[in-house]
Length: 378
Image (cartoon, rainbow, N blue to C red; front, side, top):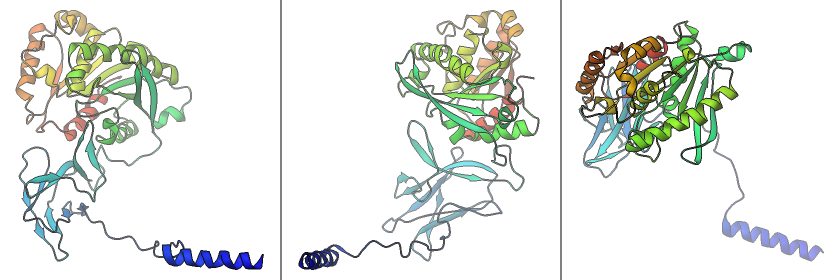
């Protein structure tokens, strides 16, 4: 037995000497290193860095509209670097252009994603918290799976529940059904637009009625067409009516009268919200569309989509407490939106038109959610 024990130890020592030392966590508890990129300072300047040792030229491509690439230089550590600012508080997309090739900031895990990865993101906060900054707690965002009846597959829905819902067990809340754009998914309103922070702040400040916000997937096949053509719209409408609304009304304490139900969306989702809302005035009392490309198309045939209510202004005006139309003035859809408003005016339909100096971007849609949510369910 003693001999066998000695042989085992000899084998163990030989194994360690051949394959390395025993496992150790020594050195794991080092102090946190300064952030590499992006670095936002208190005076709202931003420093960007990227390692590209063999590159001949590196530029920073900052923002989505009125973009002017900024040349980067090599710092003392050999990394490419650029500082911009001061920058107005808000959320921004950016990329690096390395010898003509656009790449992400791989030191920054915060990215703009949806049906693809679009770019890296950086947020500049205000000294006094903005309407879309996280400053309160207590709300929740549930992620629920269900089987879509028309698509015959598993889907997910994001549901925002305000803190007051849990504080008042007898309270029943109105519901806003909020739809995303063509390059996004059901998580985008929370992940890219901080919809939960926006709603938390509005409700806490008494600027909006407490409400539940339901965010569904607005794509049928991963393409804009699948979420905007007649067939795709029909399937999504069936899913909303047969699967999503019943799921929400069974799981949560919500008010089920049409007066307390609204629908809104951005870009592709704005077209969906308008079409579904106008086709089902018996279900929704308020409709909001932000930057819809479908409605901006001068050749759009509303009758083809079954929006027959557009020809009955008396019915629409009596049933809708709010029809909200909006578009950024830098958006390529701007002129088309003005024509769409002219169509509504010719039909005698009441609406409000909102715009600001933005393009087709999240900062505009954050503001639209804030303002639309403040205007419903009163």
